[in-house]
Each structure stands twice: as C-alpha cells, then as structure tokens.
Length: 493
Image (cartoon, rainbow, N blue to C red; front, side, top):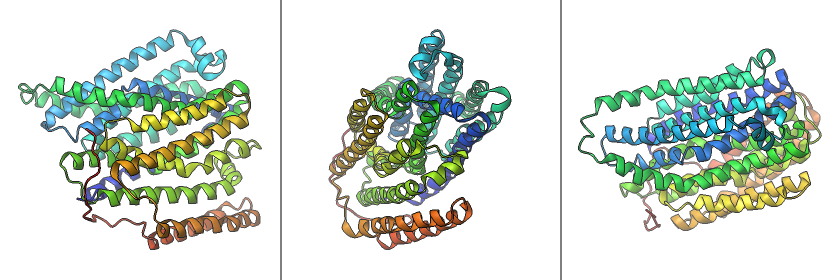
C-alpha cells in the first residue's frame, strides 16, 4: 500500500490549510511587533519564543511524538486509546506546571541567564504562560494526530498558533509586550481546555469498556520509553535554535538579535511548509508498519526527500538574492547586519529541510533515537561558535551544525529503508534552473527596486516554471498511487 493514499491527501490538504494560516499569522506577528513596538521589542519577542520552544521539549516528556506514533499502533478500543492520551497529557502538563512555578520563584537570575539581562525579569511570567500554553496545545495536538482526527488538530493549530497571537499582539503599543504575551498564553490554555472536553466525554462514556483492560501499564510501557528517549533530541533541537540568539543577546544589540532570530525564523517557517507532511507521515507510516503494509513506501519516501530538498534549494537561493527586499517588506527596514546574520542561515535551508522531512520516517520505523544522534552532532558544532567571542564564528558554526544535521539524516534514512536517494535526471534540471535564475533575479531586483508587486509577479512566474521542471523531471507524486516495491528494510521495534 502506498503512503500517499487518498486519505493521506485529504488530511494533508486540511493540515496545509492550517499551516498556511499559522505561517501567515507568524509573519504578521513579527511585523506588528516591529512596527508598533520597534526592533528591540521584536528582539525580546523572538528571544522569548526561542526560549519557550527550548523549555517545551523536556517538559512534554516526549508525549507529543509518543502519542502520534503509539496510538496508531495501539490495538485497544477507542476508549482505551483516549485513556492513553489523557494519561500522557495529564502527566506532562503537571510536570510542566511545577517547573514553571519553580522558574517564577527565581525570576531575576533566570532573566539574566536566558534573556541576557536581569532588567527583563518582567518577561518571566509571560514566558511561563507561553510555555504552558504551548505545552498543553502540543500534547493535545499529539493526541489528535495519533488518532488521525486532523479536523480537530488543524482547528486547534489555526486558533492557538494563528489567530490568537495576532489578536493579542495588536495591543502592544497600548498595553506593552509583556501584557500581550500574558494574554496570549492564557488564551491558548483556554482554547486547549475546550478541545479537551471531547476526550473527557469519551472517558465517561467508555468507563465500562476499560474495566478489564490493563491499559495503564501498557500505556506507561509504550509511551514513556519511546517519548523519554526522544526528549534529549527535542531538547537539543530547541537549543539549536535558542542558543545562538541567547549568546548574541549577551554580546550584541537587540537589533542584531532580532535579525539573527529572523534568519532562524525564516528557516522554521520554510520548514513549517513541509511540517504537515511530517505531521501525517509519522502516524500513517506507523500504522502501515504495524499492519505490515509496506509496499510502495520506499518510492514515496524518495519522492518526499527530493521534492523538499529541491524546493529548499530554489527558495534559499532566491531568498538570499532578495534578502534586503524581503526584510523591507517584512519589517519596513533592512539593517546592514542582515548580510551576516540573515543570508548565511537562509542558504543552509535545503539541508535543514532534509532533516525536517526525514525525521518522521526515521522515528516511525525505529525506536532507536537516531534523530537525537544527529542533533547531538549538530549541537556540538554549534558549541564551537558559542565558545568563541566573534559573531562570525557563531554564524559559521550554526551553518556547520545544520549541514551535519541534514547529512546525517540522509545517511540514516538511506540505511534504514535501503533507499537510493540520488538519481541524476531527477536532480539535475531543477537544480540547474535554480542556479540559472540567480543572475536574472538580481537584475530584476536592481531594475524594479521597491516595486514589490513587479518582483512578486516575477517570483510567481519563476516558481511555476520551477514546479513544471520538477514535474517533468519525475518529482511529482500521483494521487493515491500504488507501487509494489520489494520489502526488506529494517524495522526496529
């Protein structure tokens, strides 16, 4: 059975709709803070987001990905699976709440350590509420993802990560950034509780169903070993994006922090473009592997890798050439430091995208935390720059880190699934078009400087040509395609 079935495409359409809303609102939020509060406030906001993401990883106890992978493999009735989810959500939420209470009791040293200055201690409560809101949201999203209830999952995503931040940040100029982030965190918690009600209703309706099921022990044995094994990897992933801005906050201006964080945010936003694929690939692949329906998976994964990486090559090269134009549209200004803190991170995008699209297939087929190994190597490379005293070293080490991350992911996927990932014809023509378009884009930018509509029209036409080249080269999946492939790749339990 093919991974790209009709149900997969239906769920993917819903997930992409939610992600487009989230990406557009994230882009809008940064512009709102920059225009209403200034670049320094933007630096604080982006730094808080990076730190919150770093906290989210260990506090979730790995339940977000464990629910997504283990629920499709659970042979129990729906009521039993809901109990698995509530067990995981309740345990991680309680752990997170206790950790945030501890943070609030030592605000000044935490502000100095994480935000670069004890004067920013007023942002520790907003940080705590942001972390708790994100945590409960992520755990509940993991349940809906594992149950393949993507309508609920995507509605939750669009509200909490899309509309709520925009509405909250519109009051930055009047109420201040700290108050707006407080409001954002509380609103996310409130919305998550509303989406939790169907699970509680199912719990009550199926209380007799689970009487004879030893579900608690099974849930603990399935969720915690798998989830906790991923915590170091998730923590390292958070550090990989948070460590650089934190280091820079101690040695440079908040404007430089903002531009550096924007470079990382650009990578995350483009990674989010393929996020829906990862969201669906993990539970769908886990279900196929559990049912031993593995035909066609190899070819689908090859297609997924090629498409993501080639789109990353095209997007990164175009964004690097148009970096000043992008920043002017995004923020209203393009600081000189963008050449150092923004462009290099944009250029490394293809390898980061390779990691993003491959980590879910790797997690689905193996309980061994290969992604943690790749992330550890990347973090070690980043530490080389952090131990230095020059921003140039920091940027260079960040580039090397993402290069290692993508390269290791490619090698691991090839070995686990016995894949041949590189075929000349399918890579050559899209890559050639991406390179040939560079001088043309540079000329268009010079001729039509500040004529954003004209530049946007040119980019749309170029992108359509690129997609046509990819299709002609054999990089387009067929809807519901079924391909019979020889089996035999390793499945580590």
